[in-house]
Amino acid sequence: MKKNVLIALFAAAFALTGCNATKSADAAKYEQIKADVVAKHKQAKELGFIWYQKKMKKGQDYAAIPLAKAEEAAKAGDYAKATKLAKAAQEQVDLMLGQYNDEIKNGGYMYNIKKYGL
Image: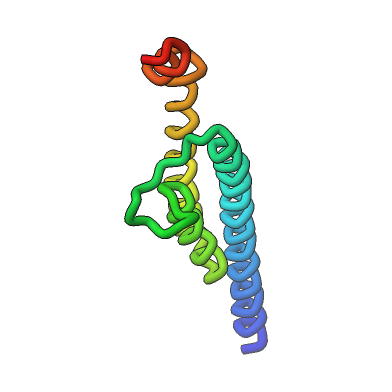
């Protein structure tokens, strides 16, 4: 009987430590993506390439909304959902900066308007 109890305790302890290791790895992955998004979002704001709609509240844009939802999910401990939402925000920020590179930096349509006053 004592042997069975000890085995059950060791199994439970092993299962709990395995779950904590996975949770901390998910949390680290989320934090890494979030830091990338925040840095790129700041850069996009400085460049003036933030995407939003008039009906959105002030301070909200297509990257800020999923990032805020990701932070809520992370506070609740759902790092899988938080990572998914942070990746959505990362995609939006990458697209914003990509548009800047295409339009302004690399001589696209907006570059020609600014350069030639079209």
